[in-house]
Length: 282
Image 1 (tube, helix red, strand yellow):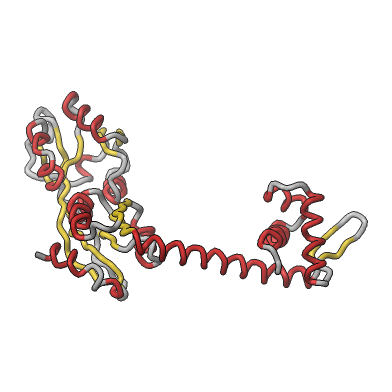
Image 2 (cartoon, one colour):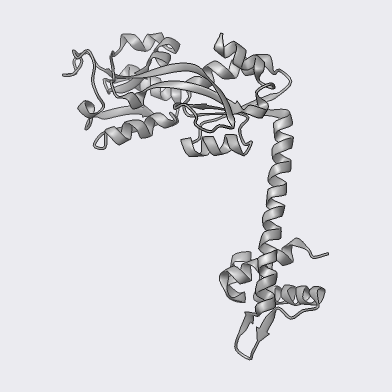
C-alpha cells in the first residue's frame, strides 16, 4: 500500500521540477523529501529518478508514476467531496441566493417545513451559484435570470425593483424615474453584501463612489443621520417602512435592476422540495 503523502510528494516534484522547490512548497527538508522518494522507489521496485553528481530528475518511469499519482489524488479529493456533500445534504439544506431579499422570504418557510434539518444560506456570485447547485454544494438556489440548464426545475419566487433614495433637497429628487447612467458620479451609501446588485450598478455607474457598510444597523444609522443618497427596493421598503420617510425613492428604469427571481433545484430533488415549491407558487 502506497501512503498518500508519498504520492503528494511525487506529484509536487513533477509539477515543480526540482526536489528543492518541492520541499519548499511541502514545508519539509530536502533530505526528508529525498528519503520519501527513495521509499517510493523501494515500494515500486523501480528507479524513478536519473541521478548524477549535481542533478536529480525524474526519469520516464518517474514521470509516468507522477501522472498516475495526480489522478489518484484527484480521485481521492473527488471521493472526499462527494461523501462530505452527501453527508451534509442528508442533514443540511443549503440555499444559495443571488441577493439577500429572497432569503428573507424562503428561509422561514424552509425552517417551518423542514424542522429536522439545519438551514444554511449563502450569497455567492452568479457563476458560483450555478456551479454550486450543479455539484450539490447548494440544494436550492435563487437566480435573477431564468435558468437555462435543462437539469434544473424552477419557479418564479418574486420580483425586486431598485430605486435611488435621494434626500428631498437633491436636484434630481423631483424626477419620476431615473436611469443608472443619470446618477453616475454621485456618492452612494451601500451595504457590502448585496449579491448581484453591486455589479449591476457598478457596470452602469463606473464613476460613482460607493461607500460600503458591513453592518446593517450602522447602515441604517447613517441613513437616519445623513443626507447621503442610497438605494432601496420595493422589498426593503416593505421590510423597513420607516426608511420611506427620510428619502425620496425614485424608480430606476434599467432592466438589470428590475428583476424576477427564480427558485431552482435539480429535477431529481423536485419531489423532496415539493412542499416548498407549492407554497412559493401559491
